[in-house]
Image (tube, rainbow, N blue to C red; front, side):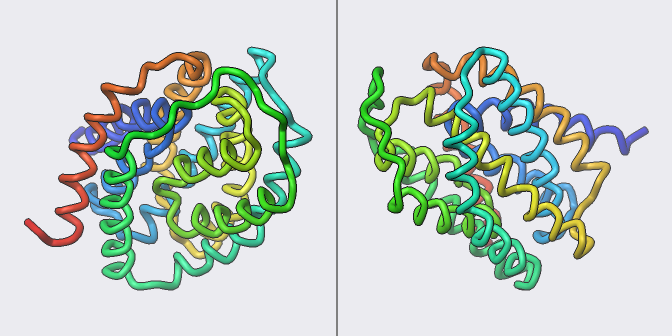
Length: 248
């Protein structure tokens, strides 16, 4: 009976992470360390997290589409350029040592905390001209590599790229973001499965929670509901990153 507790923890963390990921980003800063703290090594935790990432973004895409908010043609073009980077990043991720990966993860999470504390320019309420072009496509290749390799914080990076390069509002940014992450997660997840770096029991429990959180977050993504969550996230990630870096 005690074995059910990790699954309940993952389900609860998944709901919060799915909501945060779609609303803004950074949910994997909760899920990946949780998987590691529950006993998975870094590569398996990274692969297991991809099951939930796939399910979360599939749920969000469907939720946005049910609200008549989808731009599949543009999303697909952007997504195609993430594939080479995502495949290379995932292959690299399963080949580096566990200790090195945790060190990289700890450093990345500290960087994410800094980016969340620094005030950001408010996103526009109305659309500007959609400037999809080669700068955006090249950025997607780099983002695909980062997402395939570590995933943590990719939502923030992707949102910034879409906003500044395409010059579109927050709602459209999130519509494209969830589709792009869903798309490049497919080959990345396949690589983790192929190399045996997935715990299906933990992954499916986490995925169920993240799908629920993502569905409702997509419904509420135009509202400003993440401020309190963001500060809670900063504190949690700070503690987890110090733990991973061996500070205590």
